[in-house]
Image 1 (cartoon, rainbow, N blue to C red):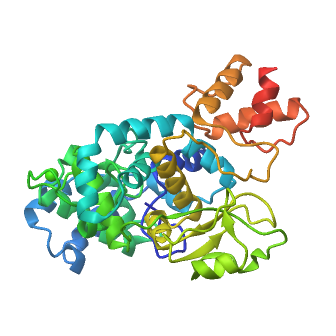
Image 2 (cartoon, helix red, strand yellow):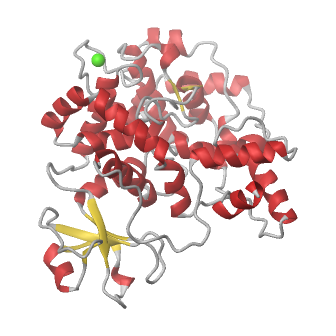
Length: 414
Ligand code: CA
């Protein structure tokens, strides 16, 4: 879920998969500030009387707060400016690569029975839940390792979003107090998103479900709880049973896309009259009563276009990013597909597509072989990999922008 650093209404820090891409520069380059421990203790003591902390008992405070040290490393992350904005096709190349589709199909098969029961309750199709799971935590492999209490306590007392984080901090303490999750398991992103599908603590109390019936809503260690909670989140956001999120469409030649927008919904018949068809040329189906036109590449006649409905909005609400919602939607479709299709019908408007995680690892291996000190070839493009890419781009006479793309990979293979 998404960051309060965005000026949007929302929720939480970039989900793990992309956070790694976007954050590593800040982590590598900024020294954390020195925080006063006396100031911190006084702040925490003052919180005990704040309204949000009323449900928190003295025993919970004593157990989790007394003697707590601030974690200054979260503050540079709060203030970081994204210095490297990925084009939508680079996002999708990493988040919806062959590996994730294969892992998603395996997850769908393994959890089919549970996902079927979840669909009965929530109306959310199994592959949609799996799509969220894959994008948010790579099916539980990237949960985030920062202790939530220390991060949220620090953000509650220092930095520029204290009021927001105090609410999340109180909710985190309540999760511990009610025994849903063991204290040592309550870890996550720097801003407090945690669990298999990266809920913020306040989201937990709106959407978490005990689906395995043990009395605890354990979205960290119980996959049934986590997946049912994800479906409940989408249901709470207005998910409509039986409706698709949307689909790729073909625009008539010369179509004016200036009215495009997820929120600018029209009845499907209006889009038919305007000449839109599905990407394969077949008529628009009735399964989506009304939809908005999404043109992610934002260029005239460039890249895939989509009609997106109310269910796409619920995916959007998970992370307040249309590219993110599209990644979840696309991954869901591919996980559900029986024909193994992998791409949109229209190509993205680039002659240098992005890399999958496997290709990122290959690129890193080639950079290591050329003597660049970039650490392990982990498939995650961080600050050191970017610097090495820039150096190689310069050597090869390419634009030195630090971007990992097919052209650079091909040049280094050669
Ligand atoms: Ca449970």
